Length: 354
Image (cartoon, rainbow, N blue to C red):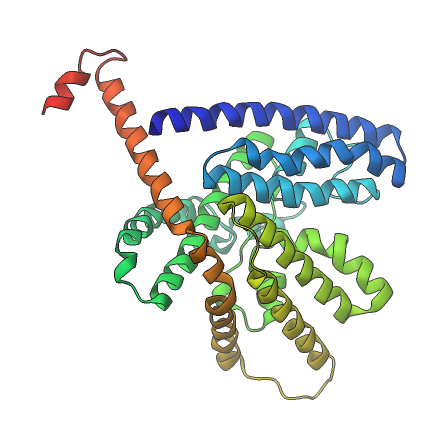
């Protein structure tokens, strides 16, 4: 059953990949002949609809969550920016670069200087070591879920936090390695030591999940800020982020939104805007970094325990992840037995009787 599930997901992945390439070919050609504006937006709506529907093609939370984030959120926003004639997508890009730019949570850049190359080689920006460490830690996290009934609430939420952090490191580090090898291009860092954040602006804007602020700045913050000011731009960005997280949770867990996740981001938006207002007053008191870092992390963690992670617990995400990991292990064991039998049934019965 586990092997059949994985075969089904791989088949769906192949179909989705084909559909994405076809849709991006169409989007690139449409953008090349239609000027930015309402007409280009209308032409791109079929590609937007496809990106929003793709998560429904998968059965597992891993594939649903990844496709929802990469395509239904980031990819859709990139297409909307393309409709307005703004980057990162541009019809002048080659088709492979256009497809990868649209369907992956990254922006590509050619290394322009020695300093850029040095930054790319900086351990903080990622690399094989982080991939290996994350790949080694995640199995222990999955194993720990078996004892969740004996954990206190804060221990379970802490386990979720560590799981999300290392999953992002593994996923984005792997994407970075593949894209670097395939296209010979560099990717901007996605996570930059969030445990060193000294303010909410530092955490959300410069350290955590950087592909999200990179897409929200031109699509939400910039336009709202130009009309209503910086605070309104910040609040609008966090509101949109909260709503999109609710959508992501729906794709992953098939549970209707509770509003708690949106409340989490609206709260952080208000506090981030207040930080910006305070920072604009020169000479006003600032906490020393030694105090600012733990205070920031305590606020992010405390509000996460209160509003963000309970939505995951109620939706049973831990149970879904554990079942899928167990299914993957069973599929790998079945594949191992098949390989040991030379692809036939000769060794299978022997292994099963031991």
